[in-house]
Image 1 (tube, rainbow, N blue to C red):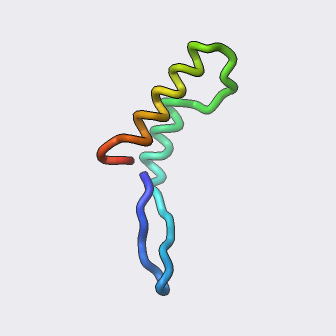
Image 2 (cartoon, rainbow, N blue to C red):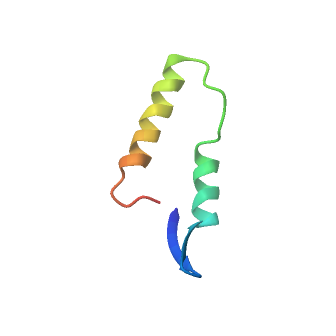
Length: 55
């Protein structure tokens, strides 16, 4: 999802809006109310954090 590009000698963080929209549609942000929801959110966060080809 994110990418680093050079512009004017500085690094600028950019991301693909389509990929981000798909991620948000798949995993809509919401308040975690149960331990099961917490476990599911933690698993997803770990998968995204440690993915070999991070989106």
